[in-house]
Amino acid sequence: MENVNFLVNRNDIHDTTVKSATTKPLAAGDVLLAIDHFAFTANNITYAAFGDAMKYWDFFPAQEGWGCVPVWGFADVIESKCDGVAVGERFYGYYPMASHLRVTPAKLSKSGFIDSSPHRRHLSTVYNNYQNVANDPGYNPKIEDLQMLFQPLFMTSFLIDDFLEENDFFGAQQVILSSASSKTAYGLAFMLSRRPDIKVIGLTSPSNVAFTESLGFYDQVITYDDISALDTDIPATYVDMAGSGDVRASVHVAFADNLTYSCSVGASHWDKLTSNTGLPGAKPTMFFAPDRVQQRTKDWGPAGVQQRSAKAWQGFIARAGSLIGVVHETGTDAMGSVYSDTLNGKADPKNGYILSF
Image (cartoon, rainbow, N blue to C red; front, top):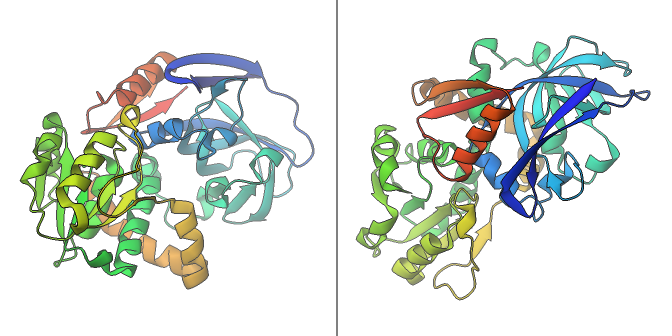
């Protein structure tokens, strides 16, 4: 059986290719999954931009010099040599941009398994977990598209909101989000909008202002060129989804000591990354969602994390279906187009892309 892979040049993420390889026979304990479909968003560009630094390329090794971008989606078991995992079962989780994935399940339960393949054992279990939809009380086949598009991103939004609340927003009275039209950003804006004492401000490009305002989650939406119009007398926290060094510097210079915390999350402006050294105000600090999940799992227990995040998710997903139009694309040519448009900031924020081979 041929496994088709959409690959990215690790030294130049503009450069992509498609490679096929014959799948090897399964060893005892292995399972072969056929990937049905997956979402592609600006978050996946962050995975590529930080592929080496954050070990995202390690999840699904490719040929020397190439990387396989991780995505969130659904897949079906088509062959199994693992007791407890049956052909025909469907799993939600972290997949490569490929037609198939071979895994070695461990810690099996009715709810799913952890992939214990040797090359993934040093990586976060948050990304190695696969959920059996038959035993997932939150699963609804009618909203698979929305689950793929929003759930992984919203979990990050939920965790950032929780982190800021735990720290009393570092004394800030307003939170500024870059790349405000991105799904992770407006998921966080949704959470913050429920806090009456916090003003939520979105930074975005001129072409995305109307869409970002239409979401109804931001108190104010301005373009990157208008940062000087912000009220810098009010202490602020900056949540950087864009990763643009120029935008970050503008915010830091404008607020100086009134910037109480600077949180680096994404890299939708991956091509404008610069050094964080020498900036006034709070030192930019990377937020890594899996670390926060592990901390809250210790604090609340797994059930506590699930209960709290599920409540927030239910509130958000009730709105999410009206925020975007889902676009389904099939084939590697379509994948290349969606990847390129998203990479170059040309993807329409009003669309949510679901891809399949």
